[in-house]
Length: 169
Image: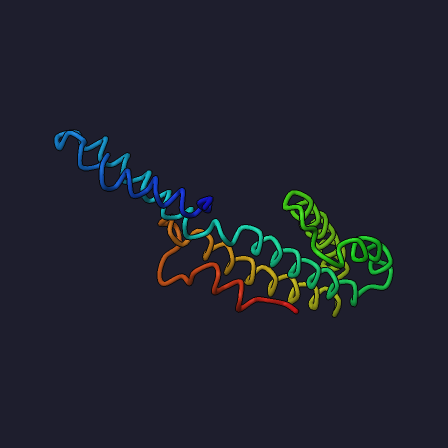
């Protein structure tokens, strides 16, 4: 059997926790603190690593959804976006290509939002609402991703639960 990445990380984490940490000089608080930080980092990696590709797929779906919603506000912008929306109809299976698709989509979202918001009127208000809703979903994903780092405050759900809740079919 070939161990999974999670199993390998878990084995390293257990070795540090059960063998290395107890063997440290009890008077060396800095070494103990550093070992604790390594354990916390490994716990975080174990919490999120299985969701790296699904996270990117969620980003892809949400960016396409946001861009599509913005194109409905302006036909000229819609024609500019048609090629990228066609190219990104399915998320790339290669993680690096998928990340590039997401970047390209988000760049068009930013440009479309900037132009629509500058125009004022109903289109600007709709664009603000669309982008604010996308930002709220993005924030929810990012907080879930970082939940074990100590930065988010309060009860933050597991990234897998957030991704399932935000799934777009």
